[in-house]
Length: 162
Image 1 (cartoon, one colour):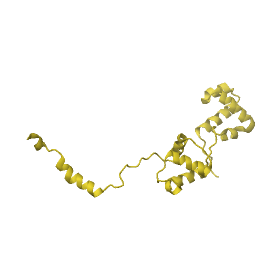
Image 2 (tube, one colour):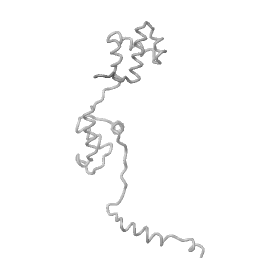
Image 3 (tube, one colour):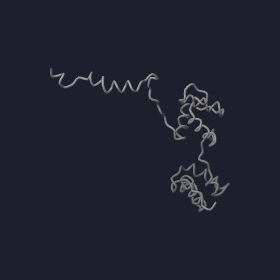
Image 4 (cartoon, one colour):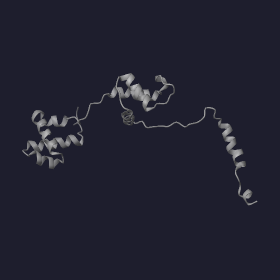
């Protein structure tokens, strides 16, 4: 690789704090300088002692590791585009419950429907509601009614005056 990896803001702040610590500044001073909690700077100091500046650069963002990786999320996205009927559901529409069941069946991972909602947002998908229309709908008859029958039924200004 020829270029430097672009550091996110949090990593830049940790590296700046690390350099200040290496320059002999005390953790409370560093905390004020970089705008971080004092306890966090003490933790960074321990990481710095063990692994140096590079360890501060590479620190994780924290939190629980994802249970679905990029490959699984990609498979989920493709499945969603294919439609629910392709994957054994009665209709082609996906619901949060169906997505949750599919993920559990395919990957053995259980999520709440709230988290499924977050995953869909992460994939760039949003809630879509289908138009509720009768299967027996006759577009020609509807158009005829709109253009012929409805105008005849509407009251005209002349009819109200009489």
